Image 1 (cartoon, rainbow, N blue to C red):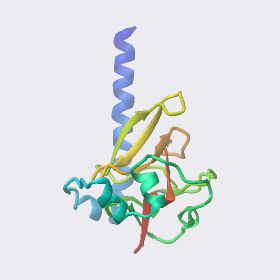
Image 2: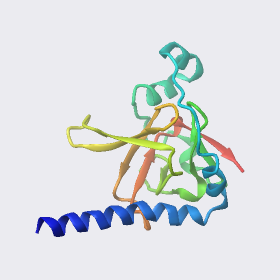
Image 3: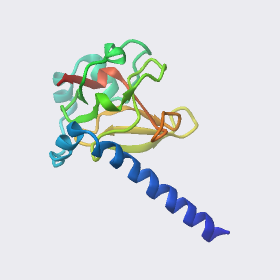
Length: 167
């Protein structure tokens, strides 16, 4: 029985890792962004971050805060473009990955590969998967398993942690 569960878990994990690649392969915008995969980590002092960010951005990106729902204009953004980290400008999502989750925060069903790192967060007692920008470590939000097909994921992002670039 243990071997069977191990095999099923392995197959599920492999399938989950292939799904975003199939989605992204269809998008010329994502293909172009993936070609720019290499970047240096950005490390700044707290004083440098405070000079670079607004008070709201600092609270979210550096202190892992959360903005009020429905407070971000990016929640209703419908134009074609890129959603980049407000802390370092690294593109994290494209408009093709966005969907209306009804939660009050900009939500995405996948991300540009290699641009997000995750960790487990126990702030609300139950574990949640928190995600951060891979370049600057800025906190963006949490990922949940209640998103649309084909991934079933919902990357629930703080709007103040993002910068929209229309293309």
